[in-house]
Image (cartoon, rainbow, N blue to C red; front, side):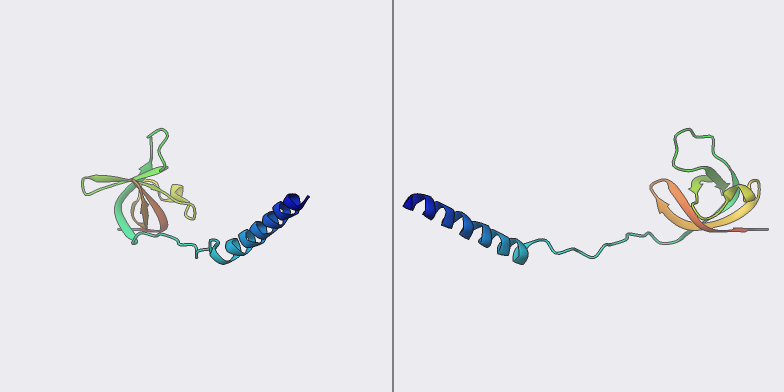
Length: 104
């Protein structure tokens, strides 16, 4: 019986010690970090993308280059066939457009 009580006491001490150790040494919530790239502006003619399975829905072609573009905030279909200056952030191979202007 004495060994049983010593065992119970040992478990209580370990549990209480573990609780305080977790409270003291436990992970502190880190401030969430948002990673953003610098704003980039691409200029050229905007057209629909024909690339199946791509992250982008449109393409800007200009200066001998082409860039995949997409947007969650701008309706790019309104600018199809027009020369535009699209500003946003790159993610992989896609420029996510925040603002767009027609260029003459």
